[in-house]
Length: 420
Image 1 (cartoon, rainbow, N blue to C red):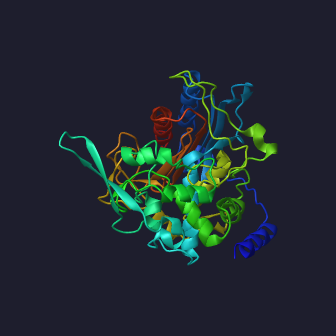
Image 2 (image 1 turned 180 degrees about the horizontal axis):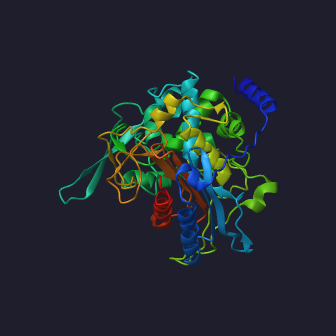
Image 3 (image 1 turned 135 degrees about the vertical axis):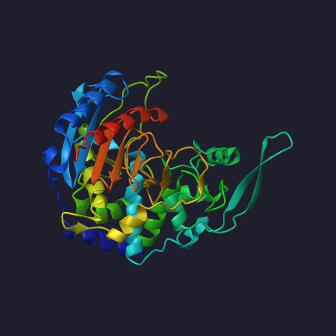
């Protein structure tokens, strides 16, 4: 079956040409934005570059389907001093997750996958998992009891991060954190089978469906996509998403002829003085990590988010139904609480994105229904359906919560440029 699927995918590659399209641009005032006010974005980002937050950046802002601001700042590579270019390629880290979520929803639309399906239907290694339930002893210290999962994790749980899986560096369940480290549970440097085998040996941190916890869930979504489609995740995305949208610079492995366009971080972290080391996308990965492994350009990601903003289609190419995009961009947490303080105030989570629940409830501007996500190395995007606005920020910086400093600054400057 796998051989037949690989042959079919090869046929798709042969008959589907790479389409490279430029998105229409417009004078900002024609779509209700101010050119003068948009210029404040560059001034602020140059200030961040001078402060050694990052060496360079590329940003894209579009409203009503037209690009009104697309510019580059600073350096592509601080080691060589080469200037940043608009076609620079960035490690996307968790901005890979929306690609994988879209892939899963395409299979849902194909009738090959249901959100309510147990993950074990597709990945038998994860069919029967236990849960490390946290309690406290008489002295208030945490204790852990390993019990059977009350129900299987579902594909729906994976997409909204309620599976019980975690990231070892984020979780507050110390028992599970230690086991992740001992069993080398992660996404980099392992094959798909090795990743699943490691996950099968470690209990969940929560009962499925009971808490939101950012995790390896989207990596497992990628494994589900591979199981259902019969091809590697990167091949599926290239066939069904990247090539149809003309995203010619987006992949899990950067070919040699594009390495010179790969943006680099500062040599050392401004806070600790330690070297900054980011994921190496110039070496073919052992697995296509659906939660963190892709790299791509700003223009490519702009086309992807414009497709979502347009209800699943762009330039006559439809990837998803508008109803599916609305479902993905709806809050799917309700009363489910976050287990870690990663979601911004006023936000829930959909099927691949954080989703704003109200116009207020957050210090930053935005509208109810806006959805977004970012990557560990300083990339970020959001889509505001009410304002018909999309924005993409690309840079390469030391991972950490401190990045909110420049991400928040970018957001407030985009919104202040709306004048109608």
